[in-house]
Amino acid sequence: MANVKLFEHRSIDYVPLAERHGKVWHLWPVWFSGEAHLATVATGVVGAALGGTFLWMAVAVVLGCALGTFFMAFHSTQGPQLGLPQMIQSRPQFGYVGALLVWGVALIAYIGYNAFNQAMAAQTIHTLFGGEERQTMVVFAVLAVSIAFAGYHVIHIAQRWVAGIMIVALLFFTVAGAFRLHLPDSQLSWAGFKATPFLAQLFAAAAYQISWSIYVSDYSRYLPRDVGVSASFWWTALGAFIGGVWTMLVGTVAAAIFPSLDLSQAIRAAGDVVYPGFGTVLLVTSLAGLVTITTLNFYGASLTLLSVVDSLKRIEPTLGKRVASLALCLVCTLVLSLVMSKDLIDRFGEFLAILLYLFTPWTAINLVDFYVVRKGHYSVREIFNPDGMYGRWNWRGLTAYFVGFVAMIPFFSTEIYTGPVAEMLGKADVAMLVGLAVSAGIYLWMCRSVDIAADAERARVADLGLDPDQ
Image (cartoon, rainbow, N blue to C red; front, side):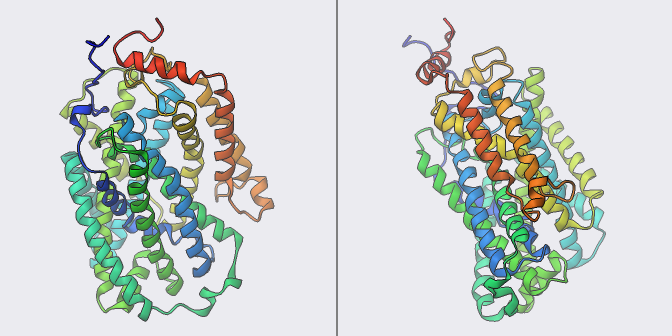
């Protein structure tokens, strides 16, 4: 037994222990920069577009970011423990083939976000410099996908530079704005509470933060395995929360002062009030952050797409396949962004709501399985074995997902569909809270017969190269 070499899976997915490196604090700039850009600003405008006042929308932003970041950061802690991308970790809960369900949801998020990012970039550049928006979308997307092709290390370097630039820009806007930006009294009254825009803003912020959960482990999996859960949680959470709240509030302030302008015009106008010409600087720096988060989405989409293909038919990860996957993702995002409605903020709010409904059951099941049911004991070897101990289809995870999703339907509140309970609540959307509770509860109940100690031993035996069922 002592002479059996521990499993070291060579693929695009798994980072072997010998290749782990980096410092846990590196997660902070990745997720601060991941939040400090125009798409996050747009998230802070969702409630204002529905008639919410600044004071209550600011509270909703803080609470929503705290709620979403809590779940997102716990996903990040899984990376150093397993060395796997986030979506691959869903196989123990949903099965080798069953995990394709959540991978499909992840691809929707990647492609959808990048389509919005490209449309926002084109709108912003048009506001600043004029020019044809379609050509701008293409140039922006090609730049982002080129950085994604350069790989993980280049992405990290770019994120650190963007973090430094955005901290300077946001500090200047905040400090100078405290003296020069003047909100109408109606925007600062506690009497202006409206449940629908408040809950829409709160859960839009929460959905936005939770949506990073699909690849948060992709950037923590390179860290050494001895990185503690608390360290990876807090460095991720602080970066994402501070970056998210700070940047969303820029949008909330701009929308409150200039409600009749579109997003990029309002930000430019607010920045120019702070200091003449600073509006242009703020938009340009926000565009830099938008490039890098679009890069992260392309990188994650490429990994997920290759994993989907590998689940259906074993493939060797080659440079050609990586280029092909990035090119396919590029084409899909460009097609979607080119046909996207001009009514960008309303459509973005709808998109976030749909992502929230799709990701809520998954995040509940994944975290409960990792922290409560299996307590972090997984076999990496068996995760890559289609006929292994986790099976092709895991009825527990799939059932909990669908039951949790169905339970949320009466609480949905979107332009496409509003459920009966949401109608009774004045179109307030509390579906996330229902989905989390139902999915986690159903999954725990179904796993009540799982022998945790025996399962952990099977995982250990499997990673020693032995048959866990012998």
